[in-house]
Image (cartoon, rainbow, N blue to C red; front, side, top):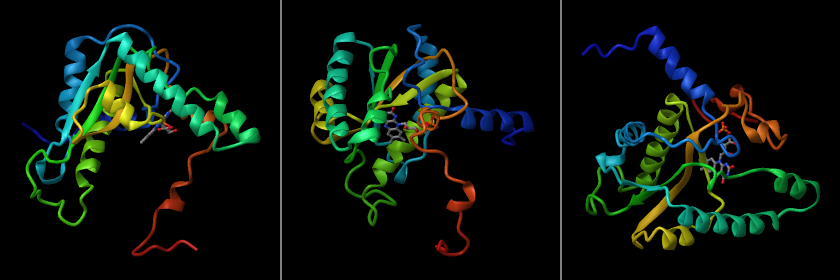
Length: 217
Ligand SMILES: Cc1cc2nc3c(=O)[nH]c(=O)nc-3n(C[C@H](O)[C@H](O)[C@H](O)COP(=O)(O)O)c2cc1C
């Protein structure tokens, strides 16, 4: 197989990266065909992982009752988060739509099994959280693979992890890392929702690149 990426293929990869969005309000109810979902999950299963540990599992949630239970936990957590700020900032926060749990046809919980390949893992001795970072690599792969299928993904982190664990019956030694809302969308916006809402904007690339050592004033 010729492993070189052609210019057109490269452009498609960059288009996917730049046009990926966190989706909360543009979900359509249309179901995701099984073969498409299988492609996305198989792509995620090809993510890099520390010591080739592949610590992830993917819980695919279609059951409305389970989604509703998760949504109710989101609502509680969202109120707790809002209570930490006040004034105009709180008003702005409360105006943001920060999940699409029940509107999206599929939710996916991605977990990390910290003991998957025993207690010696190449690359994890000095930085034990590498298994979690590996799981996040799989999550981002879902995000990009889904975008290449014209499917949107929204990551919902405003939920108590213990509640996710209980509702989804996840064993105690497995950690939920991401709760994702997944579905076809009416549109992929050209800018992040939080930027359009005036919450924050993208920092200039020059301000995050250093040469040889940390050289910010
Ligand atoms: C770890 C993580 C957790 C996030 N949690 C939430 C969340 O709870 N609710 C939400 O609306 N967006 C969430 N997001 C999405 C970010 O707000 C979004 O990625 C960011 O605003 C940039 O927008 P973009 O992804 O469309 O480029 C999360 C993203 C990451 C990476």
